[in-house]
Length: 80
Ligand SMILES: [Zn+2]
Image 1 (cartoon, helix red, strand yellow):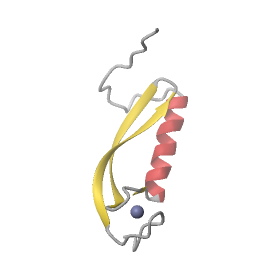
Image 2: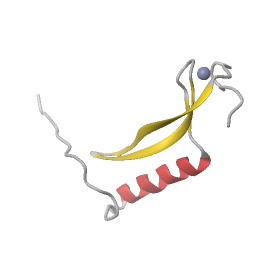
Image 3: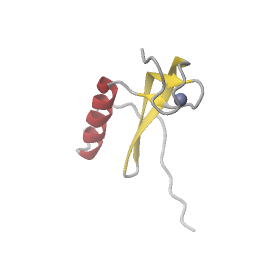
Image 4: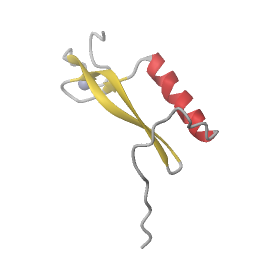
């Protein structure tokens, strides 16, 4: 656990679940992760493992290796 926030110096750090997303071109992958977060300023801290996971997912998106991803929505583009 972090002892204090690197941004605002607050010691009020809490664990919270967030729906983080990785975007590449028009593709987005949502990942449920538990992160340490500053109660005061809202800054979020990912673990090195989580950052590695996000990089892996981004790389899979790049290579179109999405077989183990579950489709949950559609993307749209509206031209004006
Ligand atoms: Zn903070």
